[in-house]
Image 1 (cartoon, helix red, strand yellow):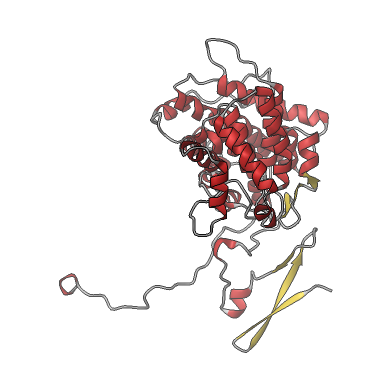
Image 2 (cartoon, rainbow, N blue to C red):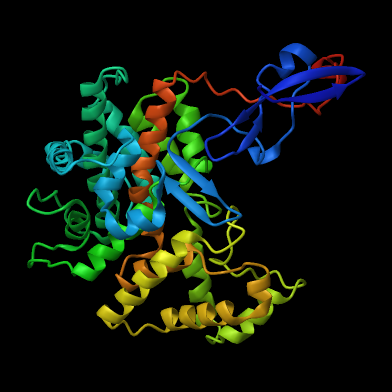
Length: 427
């Protein structure tokens, strides 16, 4: 027997269906509420509102659980690579060896970016933020690929996925090359996807570049950890924009813009900016830990705790080990990263932080890794976008295949009631 919830309003009772997910999540279906009662619900930030049914990602913030298509994030980060996880998210199952090889080969077919795109990137000043450039370049890909994707045609959808995975990595690294004044690099089809990122970013015409395997493995894990995270701000944006049947590139461009904000993808940039500020003011980590505990002090410790996870961020457990390995392998001597380690050690042992579950999160450790690799702070969110890309594609594809209705939230109007218009000479 199906469950129902009862809502009583102005003496009338309304029965609302109850939906239970595969992990026993419970939702009250209010999709017909306005039709039957004339009322809507108010939920600023949509913190209590489900907007879709999804088979992609399960997240339990209270228990610190994250799964993609039923697989634990711990298993995927330990046993799979980024392209395997991308295939899983987008197509629903882990690929066979043959499917994975074909996927990588097909991505390589689409890594060449139209030369006219260089004219677009040339139009930006060197001072432009890489995320602004990336959003514009991603949207511009629509001009070079104007045909809309028929999501019901498997071959057409598969090609669009491979094209997006291939070209996005290239243009993402071009945003860095632009700010550095370096010539733009091209994808090397003899290298893997994550290794190509390092090549695209750092190889110069003056000599060959060899990426460190420990670094490649750490980035591979980071991209996996960022690949999807349920209905966050940027993912919801991709689905909302795509619900009007906007194309894949344009929808992902909107996701890039949403990710840019410091409360979302910009959090790892905020971590490093905080660490640099502490260093500039003497580097006393203990002083700033005390400031973080002081309710009267406006200082906020960035990279600790998480809006969704009420326990330890499961992604942070995984990437902490990778961060330690990267720092040890590269032998980085950086006073800013030394401050980060002091803050980490203090927070993990301090009862104030432990009792409030203010543990270092994935943004804290990802910022440390990116800094150790010499990636500029304003490129950190671009790194996040590269990892999140398969999640955005998967969510857009699911929304289109399910024929979800166009997103159209309601509001409660709080402005003036009807007023008489006064002519200009009477105001």
